[in-house]
Image (cartoon, rainbow, N blue to C red; front, side, top):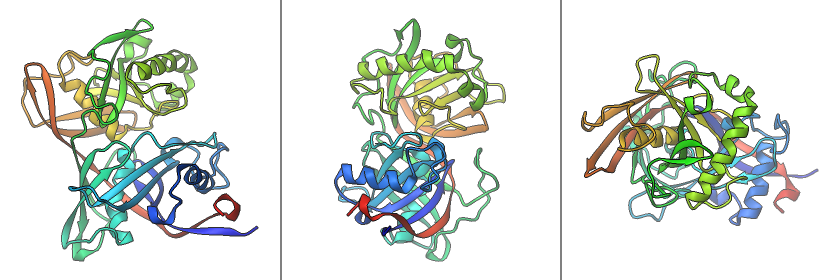
Length: 361
C-alpha cells in the first residue's frame, strides 16, 4: 500500500507529547485534516498501535504552526486533541503544555528567527485567540534543550521556557463568568463556571465525597464520580453558551481541596473523561484566576488582599505547578494583566510521518 509522507517534529511539550507540523504541509479543510490526524496518531484503538499516539490524552495531541497575520504575533498555533479510543478530533480546546514546544518548533522549522542568548516568540493561539510570549533559550542563535529547569511530571531537567499569557479572560466565551454567576448549583453541587485561558467548571472535592488528594489512577477507577461529574459538566457547558459538549473536551472540570504540602491549593484536573496526571497549564491559569477573583467557589483558599503580582501554587498528583499572576481587583471586578508559567520541552524526532495515501489523496 502506497503511503504519503508529511514532515513533522515530534516533541515533548511540558507534560504532553505530540507531532508539531508546519500547517502548510497539511490539508486546509477540517474534514480532510481530521482524517489525516486520526491516521497519524492511530486514533480509534486504545493503544494507538497504528500511529504515534501514546494511548492517553496527554500523548495524543497535535500542534500546527504557521506565520501569523496577527498585528502582535509572529506565529499562529492551532491545536488539535485527537481521541485515542475514538476515531475523532476536537479542534475546540487549546493546550498550554504543547504550547511550550511551539517556540522551539517554530525556530526549528524556520518560521521564527532565533536571536543570540534567548528568543522571544510571540504566539497567537488560533483556538482561543489568546496571545502568549514564549521565551526560548537560544545560545548561539540555536535552540538548546538542556538546562537546569525541572517541572513535575517530567524526569530530569531541561532548558526553561517561560510562557507569558496575555488577554486570556473569556478565551472561548468572551466572559470571565459566562453564566453571569460566580457560584451556582448544578445537580445539587456548587460550582463556578469560569473562562480564563480555558473554560472550566470548578467545584470543591468534598462536594463529591472526595479528599482532593487522590491519585489520578484512584480517580479514574472511581467511575461513580465520573457518572456524577459528567452530567454537571454538560449542563454547565450549555449554561456557558458552549452548546452540547457531550462530545467535546471543553469545558474542563476541576476540583479544589486544602493543600497538604505548602501550596496554595490542592487541585485535580480532568480532560474531561480522565484525570490529568499532573495539571494543565491553561487549567492552572483558570484555576488561579478562580482563586483570586472574589465570590467564587474558591473563596477562603487565599488572601485576595496580598496584592499583585502573586504566585499561586497548585498541588497536583505528581507535585505542583506554579503560576505568577499580575492582576487587579476593582470594585469586585477581576482584571488579569498576565499570567506566567515555567515549562520545558524537548525535540524527540525530526523527519517524515507516514499515512496511507488514500487518507489524503
